[in-house]
Length: 609
Image 1: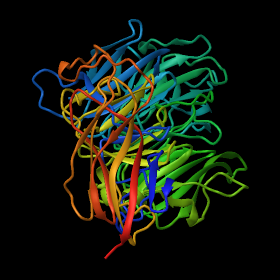
Image 2: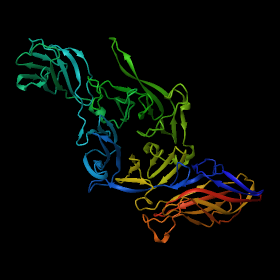
Image 3: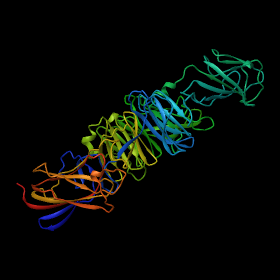
Image 4: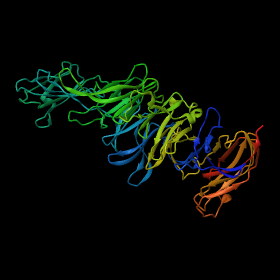
């Protein structure tokens, strides 16, 4: 707040920076000038100006013809097969929405997928992987298929009688295994590591790389043996036999809902969680050391805390994996453990961070400026270690900082367990979306604002442009180039706190104010005031429109071409008040506004009675 004094009992009070929404629980008399007690569909720009929020336009209706209305379950953008892709899931289908060669939006069906619940996408090894709680699929840029599962090499150097050295664990995703035999040149019966097989799939001569003709051997699936018509020549690891067991643990993978990449200093493991338990499973490396998204070794599990509360969020944070439950926070750290035989193997250690605060919204932990944010209780928490010796989270309750006090009243109306959160790092805005409404934190300007008629259920930033999916199956483009919500007017309202201008013991008189508006196509806003004496005052229209044919409305046509900021003087008389409210509103479907400043001339007339 600034004040320019004209005399002992008169001053001009200036608003040069807008502070966003502040729902102070003790009332609005303590708000700073520029902060809003009530705000909807206005935003604060990075430079601190007050601007009506962007509009939106539908890019595509994603429901198949004849399908019942349903939400977009997920939208993702990234590279697959070296090509930039924009992908969405809706109406039981996976859709391709961007033609990289033509540089244009398209709508092309990729394949069928379950869309009864939210879908999680992640890119890995130049492929796109999709998991939704009942399916685990992969798209290579051409074909959508179920992830079949890597066939692990469970034993090597196996003599014909069986045994050998254990190498890889079995894969939860499938019952397929293989092993390498070292023939002795005499035995024709090879004993596999398991009995009661579903099938023997192949026999391969590793010295030539050729698969043997099935007529060269017979298989006894019950006994788990392979009998050759002629004993193979002596060698070390020269024969590979592959088989399949009828039972697998695939359902443990398919029941997972979300995933996060982590493995210490590199993101080579996929941690899957969200089956309603305190367990997370993670992928492994094959015997060549290659990370795989189709290999979840049987023992690769992490149990976090007690079994009574589920894992609700995971996010990589510096060199650790931050893990959140509904009532607590933990970290997972990569390390090594020495086995009984002296061999060393990798391990992941779980450490408690906070035993009282966690994350209520499953799968909605977001990393904002490299600090996790979670929803808990009726608040938003930011997790940050302020110590100089480490940036990782440690056991210190001070690391969970509540950052949503200014929007507590609105946030407590949201069901946090069903909220969708998104960090638009391009615009530096953090979204909390629920049932057609959104709370937005502009962390570049540290301001909050609220959007209504904003039906976002999933979001993505594509080439610097924000896209969101709706509950009725449309993909929308959210941009300042649109003046309406796909044809619907945007009802924007801003109301200041009760301003006493530093002297709440005096009555005042104000008859004049100035409002600065940025010149742009179809810029207009209605201005009025309220006081503790009256809630009804004259409404004044402020316009600052440029000549532009993009949004022609001849009722508001202007030939103005001056692009310099304009100040408009308004005469709105308010007498004998103690507290004063400034109000901006706009609800036209063909206009917008960016308010740069407001100046209010106030005369002090005596003591309040």
